[in-house]
Image (cartoon, rainbow, N blue to C red; front, side):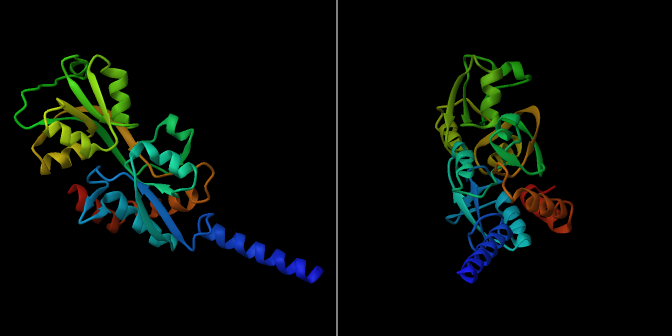
Length: 248
C-alpha cells in the first residue's frame, strides 16, 4: 500500500513539473493567444487568417519557450475576461498598460509606445488643431469599446456624440458610410488604415502609451515571457519585424 501511495505521489509531482514547464497549463505545450483582429498592423485578417506584428511576436516568443501558438480572435472588450478565466493564456492585442487593467491582469514589460490620432475621410474639411477642438457637439466620433481612445473621448470630448464598436474595422466602415465624422484610435493603426482606405490622419493626441502582453494574475507565464521578450527586443530579428510592419 505504501509503495502504491509513493507511486501516485511521484506521478502527481511529475505532472506538476510538466505543467510548470508549460507555463502552468497542462496543454501539451500549447500557448493560446487572444487578440482582436481589425487593429492593423498589430493584428488583422489576411486570407482568412489572423496575422500582424503581435501575432508574429507571439510566434517568436512561443518558439523560444518551446510552445505551439494558437490564436483566438474576439472582441477587444472580451479579452481580459477570457485571460482571467483561462479561455486564453496571453493577450496580444496592442493593449495599453493602464493602472485599471493592471488590477485585473499582469502585464509584461512594454514592447511598443504609441499616441492616439484622429482619422477622417479623405476630402473631409474637418481641421483639428488642439485636443479641445474635439469636445464639440457637432462631431460624431467612433471608438472601439474598452480602448484607451474610448477612455480619452469619455474624459476629454464629452460634448461630442460618441459611438462605440466591438472592432475598429466596424468604425472605419461607418466612417466610410458617413455615419461618423471621425475615429479616435492608436496612431500606428490610423496610419495603416490611411494607407489602404480613403481616410487620413489629421491630428495626433499625445498620450505616450505603452503596449504590453497580458496574462492572468500570478500566471507562471509572466517571467518566461518577460525574459524572452527582453532577449528578443533589439535583436536583428526584432528589427526585421519592426521594419516588416512599420518600415522603421
